[in-house]
Length: 460
Image (cartoon, rainbow, N blue to C red; front, top):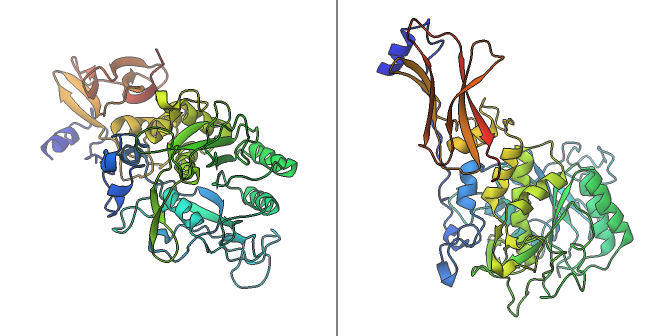
């Protein structure tokens, strides 16, 4: 308070002085089963390899929610009454519930929450459990004191039920559901599906999704076979908007056990993600641990949604490239997938922020990359960098605390006229964690402007 009063007492020097809040990382969620979610945070529990995970807590330090992003999940449906899945269902803005009219002209009457393509009705309720398990990995409510923590909050799930109570479905329903979801304008689809026959019609629909910029996160299959030799569809269609996902276990190797061993392929599987004994909601109010590439794909889907929120103008190819460029490479994955690595959620979102440094997703006046370097979140306008100014040694200084991020840096610049800027200070990973730059005050009040910039650090 004394410093603020002092700064306010020199209006010729300081235009405005006010306290600035500092946001804090999301930390460990209070969901009681989070300790079992090794795919999010692997501490070596149950004999696993510590840190063989997607780095979810560190990811949540940057982004917890992706409000406004709709994800289509093509599966066995959604358990709309499960306590941990409340509030995540998409609501069709073009339909009036219960009026018996196809208001939006989709060919589906009262498709308020999606569509059941198996029974051709407007109730895509899960009657198997697979779809709810997949959806929970993506978006189960976090920090609600029950169950598990989903990877990304704020999203809405468009449920397309194409699998029946035996967890099987037809190609025609898969085609119809993909078309339906594309026409609803979703940016991301999750297809935890395998063993479909090749279909030129579905191939064409996936190409239409590519033209629409939709990324398709698809599981690689659970036969333990090489997809380069025996293609497993739908993950093996040759479109660059498809991310084909294999399954790794808690020991940081491809899951190759007797039950649902992960497929692989040096050219037809892109990366691996956690997929062995993944706990998530199922039917009733229960939870169950499933194993398969079906559980790996939703981790990738959630990260895709976060990138969409950070860079909404991006299409599928840009999103896919950021994820594939950001994997954690390990010898265990070398030669069995395109990237030779597994999903890293933190580095994937960081890649997106570096490529679009000026985007301000939460509208708080601080660009995403600046918030990334400050350790504040890009999805909350109440979490802001602690920018400060002070007078020290005859200088009016501008500064901001930062966290250690080796892939970007901060600069303080000055300008007499907002047209020409001169760099006063640079702060990168190797220098102290608080950036300061200033204007000399000798000879009277300084005249000019100060600003802080966040810039990606070029690769060596």
